[in-house]
Image (cartoon, rainbow, N blue to C red; front, side, top):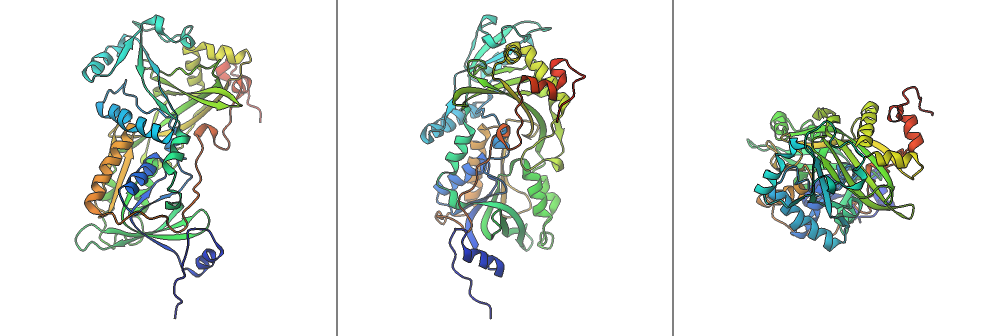
Length: 469
């Protein structure tokens, strides 16, 4: 006769390992399980708990390790897509949240620098949407760009100051996770179980997670929300391909069709870091060049430093959903890196000159995946998956979309599940690790001016150079 299942706590104790060996897996019966530990998933956990739901979260990586930390922290790019809902999300949701949680936000003037085309299309949109801006002309161009070729081979010179914000991503992830540590499990979903819908779509009856501490926990959620970012297609494929899905009456293509609007682009990011005296905190959009520079203030080597995150639309490539990575890692093309840096130095030659003269300026390149909804980077997708009774998605494209996706998710969850009261914690939860920024992860290789020319010789017009080591 089998022994009764023993009591458990949420710590990783000896008797938990004994229970693991005997196959006595602890079970968490929750109202809502959020899958995905990025900003979207953490905000959902926060909001669901505040509304009285017994909610928990499963992440297959350190919190915020994917799209959240590849994103430069821009809260809104409303100057290129002046959407009133996005502005409200920033002004009424992100900024008050950041103030309450003491999350640093860098605001102030950003610049749109453009020739007549495409600039002539922007002011009418700004006027129609009540978006404030200040046209300054060429004299208003930030000094760092004064010797550049921003307007070369173009017609007209337009420099406009706009108000935008960048939020501290690390502090944001810590703030969202604060107080929820015991509700968060870091591990991989190993099994799914389904209940036959008897003529209706099947329901996800339970799932088993193998934690990264070599423990096992079984979840029995009333509802599951996938906030899985670039891993969404992989998650759905594992869901509909699991044993028992077809037997329970599931239609895999019907479920997959629910996320067909979700696509990805491979985006090259050039990170340039230096003291604020050499690399000022100037953010700029250059729509006629397809480039943007997002500046982030921070402390490095006990000094005030700035990192520029430079993206170039001409260096983007479509990525098939089946090739999308869970951690939002893209494919780095050295030739595109060289072209990108040369383009940046044409726009802001002072960066190149200061680095060559010995300033403490370093360079790093990485590739990430940009999630898009219906071909746009400023939309979101939130709703039940068609073909599953109790599974939905919450997918943002851009930071403003996180709040919109959260609001819509809370609505469809409320239609399906009544809150039973928050849980203090779940088995094997606790002390989740926090991810690192893409440019600060293990193996990130920051290069000084000399090393940049060795690794990417065409940046310094040395095509015969060979990287050492």
